[in-house]
Length: 247
Length: 287
Ligand SMILES: Nc1ncnc2c1ncn2[C@@H]1O[C@H](COP(=O)(O)OP(=O)(O)OP(=O)(O)O)[C@@H](O)[C@H]1O
Ligand SMILES: [Mg+2]
Image (cartoon, rainbow over the protein chains, first blue to last red):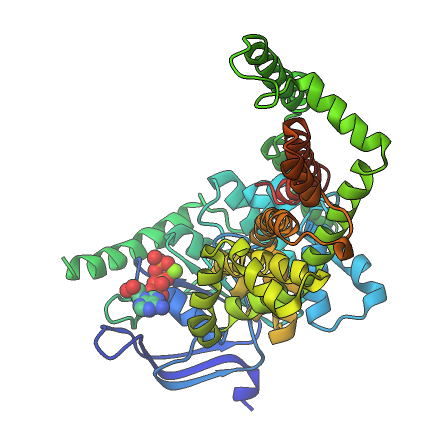
């Protein structure tokens, strides 16, 4: 019964790109419950993207087992929208590939745009939208797939702080409305504390899980709340120690 | 619940404000630039014809070596009045287009295979590149021996000129697709065919269009070379044949007139056909 509730179940997962190169991921084990919001922190190059790619089946592990309750969807740092399609058509493409019936696609795409607060952007091309708006279209596209697991690889790293703050709020709102399981990768400790129910810290070379924190802070949290700042500085200390270890 | 919807509308307002601030209003091309774009070529022609007239007036050479613009115009007018010019141009254009359409039909699957299959590329790419290096006029004697003075000869030469460019254009268009977009295709769950249809083909369109444009230029050149060499009543009239008639008669005005017509048709096709498609494609993608 316990496993029925799991969205992700990794056990002893390792990844080495080729025999001569260093081990990138070293014996990771992790379970993520359905509906959980987990943030993954780690220094640059520690293997966060590699892990998400393996979860999304874009790459294979060298050893160990990966169980996901369903194929996840993945969002990148840049929105990766098709530049020849409008915002609405980008979402319609996701619906189409997922097998959504033709007659309802347009309406559904518009609904999803409204969900991310872009009611008037259906006919806009990606280059006509700001970075934040593009990333929201990308969220809407991910939601169009109706997958229960959403993997996000530093999705807001390229955005300014104000836009990022707004997107945090929007993402949490969507997460609460749906039953999404979210695994959110970031470099930004405060962002992790602001969003996650659980924060996992990864070590570098080889990548392992070092430590994890359950976040029991009152909602809604603000990124500049003192509790967030306190916990963030505690986690930052651990992260720094880990980075120093390589110096 | 009330609190929740308040929160919703607060987010909506924030979003609207942010979006308004972040979206740039599109800058319109100035009227001057637009006028210049159309007036530019006309100015260039006027300048060229003026310079030509001046050189002619210096009387450095006899008229049969360098006729005046007026004489060339009269010669073209004669051809027009005799009902030769328009059918010639039309015939060449029709042949060119038919050959070009064939070339697209043949080159597109080749280019797609080159783009998506590494093994095919290893074998085929050197052949295609070799063909592209060879001026297709070199095939005219061979084609005449194979097919005689027939349309088959002309189409063969057009195909050998255009197919490599189009195939290479498409395959390099595919090479330039950001890997991110291909990954998105996989994440969206696209199968092989869906990823070709919804991602690879549209994403490679700019490269493909470049290949088509170059392919057309090669097709048109090859056609003229073929028409110039393969002259036969069975082939009917064409601009290349018109050029050859001028050469045989030693009629420099007609030769220049034919050259200008060939150039004019080539530029016209580029202007009315390729250039708008290219501009639209790039504009849509914000390039
Ligand atoms: N395709 C690949 N082939 C070989 N090595 C790779 C490949 N992809 C990643 N690596 C290596 O694996 C390590 C982890 O890379 P990864 O992109 O997962 O890190 P990351 O934690 O996402 O870093 P960042 O925070 O900078 O995005 C790096 O040392 C990288 O050089
Ligand atoms: Mg990464």
